[in-house]
Length: 465
Image 1 (cartoon, rainbow, N blue to C red):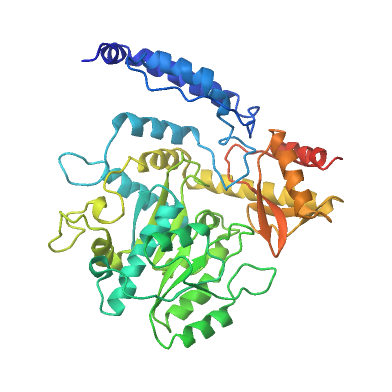
Image 2: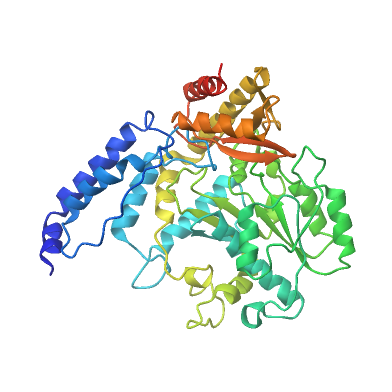
């Protein structure tokens, strides 16, 4: 064995202790750590011929790159709908790395970690109030969850037309309807060969809303003359957390033949709160659902999950079946995740979610969700009462979409740059209803009312007041 590798093997406990101390230092100071970093120009170092060992690698990381690590897991990182990581989720992620399972099966001699993923999916269905007739699994993010669901939808449409698309390919353009699809769904359609520009946009209720106009949707459906199609509905839009009327869509499904996919990447968490669950009433009738774990579940990045109705399991296997592992009979009898989702190699993504769900339970997550919503309302009220800012849309859940009063696009961007450069908060730019705006998304378990007050002061200073 290489001499340095043998040394590190013999000193693994010391190396991991050093690494843990580095991570704990970051976590203990995360409230004060900057939410943005100045651009650092660095010369890339070459690959060493003779490595220096793990301890020296940690020292070099600390010296060259530690200052690039922003507080993206902190309480005032409000850009991109980024969650943090609960203590229990970190525990699970550490063990996922150490155990290094390629999570696939529930019966195989070489790997049984799929049992934990099955249990985690069952807990998530209970958390979101979804029925048992969904199959689920973990993927890297909402983009891959949308990809997984829409891949099965593609196979369903093909079968309605008498085509096995998984084997024959996409023969023609399929109707895909949506009002305000997220970019991850559009990207998934591109990767699936369905065409990112082939979505037929349905009108929203009015110019101030992002929810689909149901009368316009039914009119569009009728114009298809019975042709099967895919409907992508929003379980919380990214700008204003507007919801398509899931119950009305469920009623349409009784009349028309279509695949219904719900993109509820973060808005699905409204189902946890009795005060907001009505926003998703009827979504249990969907064919597939996307939810992101590294948002409001507050687990580390590269964690999302999908739910697809079990009645579509054969379509799902036809879409994702490993080519060298054809099934005979019921695919659930000899279940393997590699035949139900895109990846053949899979990190043990379910373990951080399992840990945090076991640690904090349904009530713990309800408290996080309702607290973040209350904080978003607090920020919205500050903006409403301000002489310098205005809301671009009502605060419906956990996202605040606002702009400068009387500010043009250049002024709004300049304000946002000053705000982010202060390092106390991070927000992202957006456009809504033809106006340049700013979006703050609150999904972090650490965020407090005091953090909102800090941000309000930062906003006033960045506005020059």
